[in-house]
Amino acid sequence: MHTRLLFAALIALLITACTTYKPPVKRELKTERLYEKSYDQVWNNVIDWFAKNNIPIKTLDKSSGLIATEFNLRNNIKESCDCGTSGFGVNVSPNIIGNFNVLIRRVEASTGAQTATESIRVNVSAFYKTKLTTSSFTQGVPDQVSDTDCESTGHLETAILDQAGR
Image (cartoon, rainbow, N blue to C red; front, side, top):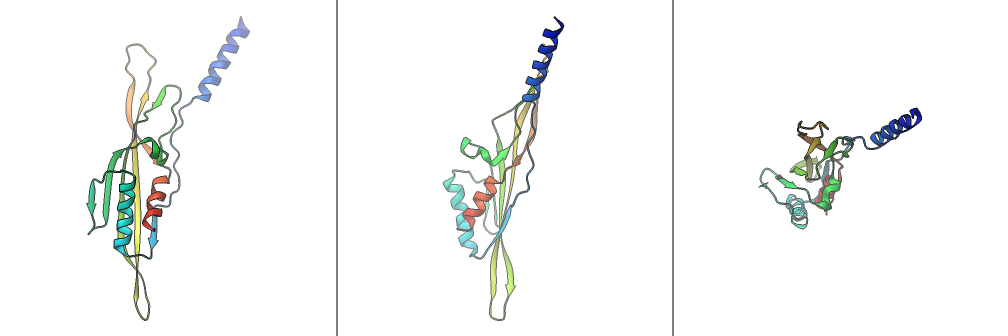
């Protein structure tokens, strides 16, 4: 009898250890690049990325260089963020809200003896949120639902920066 109880406790411990909630991993990202292209060309390339990926634009201001959006992530771009992994007692919602800003600015790179060269700096800032549900496992006590920040994987930033330079 004692062996069965010990075996059951060991199995429960192993199952719990294997399914523990894992929070999102913070990564070092490259979110900015410089381009030796015209401002209009870079601007149009970035706008093309939004159109090709069917991402709605919330704010579009060419004079300030700002493009901003907020949207629900679809399955094909969910690799853009890490919201953690569900585990024992904690469920990570698959419904993710993405918000990102693209800032495009002219930068004078250098002044030579003959002419000044113009560089264009593109910076992408991405933010993601989802909901975590923590189970109480007690009858009559409601589960707790809270907002949680997700971490960018750099996938979206790289895609936009690659498109900007085409």
